[in-house]
Length: 454
Image (cartoon, rainbow, N blue to C red; front, side):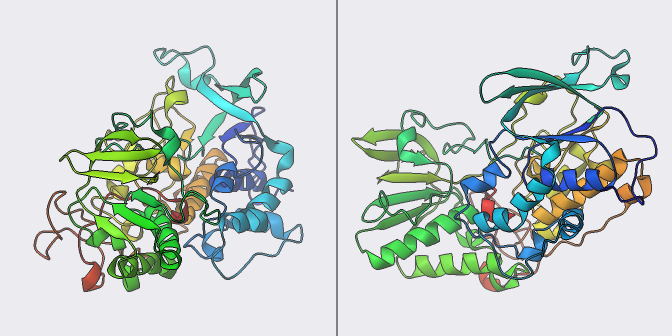
């Protein structure tokens, strides 16, 4: 049902195509529905929130009120849905309690098993200037059975996320030598540790310093507490470990702060071996075990390796569009300085809207985790504000598009990275934008985007 307050007075016969039926894509669909703008939501998976379903066992550190979009809530409440109001859901609970009901309510305009393989302008490749902005977008898709289709659109909102593009173990951003050959011994997601086979009584190395890595380390440390034969090594690329523990009690997302505190305790109790300045150059094999070789020659041999070094945007299907992306973060240039993890934490990042996300290609927007490129500071609330503003712009409501309806919580994590090879940053030498407990006041490490980080 269209809310008359938001109805677009000059609707286009072509739909807005939204790519990705995850939290932000579904929220965009709810806002488009509310404003009476025709849309088509394309999802590569067989069902809604297919990426979330892959980490359904992980508990989020954002509470329920921070995980629900306002327009989506209005859409669902009108159908008798009651919003969860407290607690920290797992990925599975986020789907069952909110994302799946929302997808069901919008199902008439969602197409599953539709992977987007390219986006361009009708009859115009990237080089053609003439009449470019007057042509509709053409979105190429392929279905699960290989059928191809071209869909015309008046605008495109890419909310496809970064889940499909995990960063490698190699310290230079490229796969380590031998990484592909050892793929059967490596995992690039947080494993479901409820299935203990393959971990209990074995040695696991976790590579990474973000909240995903902490989540994995804590699960493994609980196994190690029960079974002394279980070994856990946490490998960090930076020379100092302090920033890996986050903001602790200074974090205004308490569940996130508690993760770091528990990780510190696990290391202090000897349940986890912490190795710093370990930058993987090669990965070899010793039978059914992986051998990690660092740039300085040190080695770690493990039964399993969990690589949680972050995610990066898949830009491969956007090659025919004219984009203005920051060369470092691969995020829209206008927001790059506001989300750079070397400078900012989530709490110091301003809300971003349509004007910040606009590209040289008119009516094309990157939203959600993908809009942050390689920056790890994305929160669900940030994405919901983005899609609210972008949809308002597409509906012609410029005032609403410019308005800011969001105040982000402080992360409690310092913003400056300090020196990559230096020990803990001092008050004089390490940058910081937030006030944190003294025990946590050191440089931020290279934090990989985590599913628990929404």
